[in-house]
Figure 1 (cartoon, helix red, strand yellow):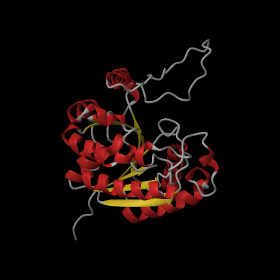
Figure 2 (cartoon, one colour; figure 1 turned 60 degrees about the vertical axis):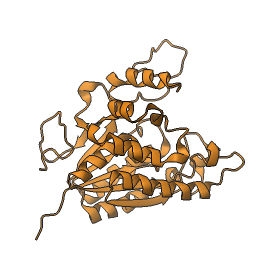
Figure 3 (cartoon, helix red, strand yellow; figure 1 turned 90 degrees about the vertical axis):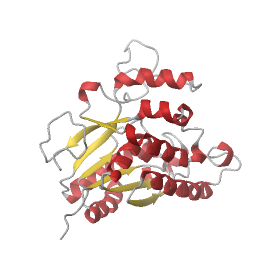
Length: 283
């Protein structure tokens, strides 16, 4: 009997999240013959509608937006050669503080054990060797990202999965360059202060984004798959106003976004750190 192929499972909140932080690893490992499973938790209905119309504005039809984003997600998965797409289908909760957070049935209002059991079923089905999701703050504080983190960690516990588990992150050393590049492209971007002045009158904006370089455990070079990652983001055309990475063009995008970084939080392989492969110790 043929040996079961290695499997990567990425758990993301919305359509388009898969491309930004994990598009490179999804494409890279698919090219290496590894089974890739993308779990998308929400339907993205709080995204932009046609012409960039925002939720709550005239012309924004949440059901139509969800249907449009489902098609875009399929196209992005094709660009990244994702083996299996699984949709949990929860209604998008919107940004923190929006009234949509509290809509009955939204992902944010769903009890963690309930959603975790659904994800646990997929973990039992696919038996992933590596699972990737967000940190406790959902990378930048979005309620659906936080919820995706919570249900993933709960599902790992429920199943007793031996998978290596990673959280997406970015190196703080690269944030200044990232911000400078975006400002050159006309995108306003203020680099979060990792250590805000306690005497400042400005209230902190939540936990800082990313980690100091020395705390990042895993650096995966995905530059060879930069074009696929770019295509996956471009597939989410309806959200183009928010996907400012596309303004960089392929070459600059690949140079700036071509190394994906992670924090390894669970491991049964004993693979030494730092590592340059999510599957270190497994092959």
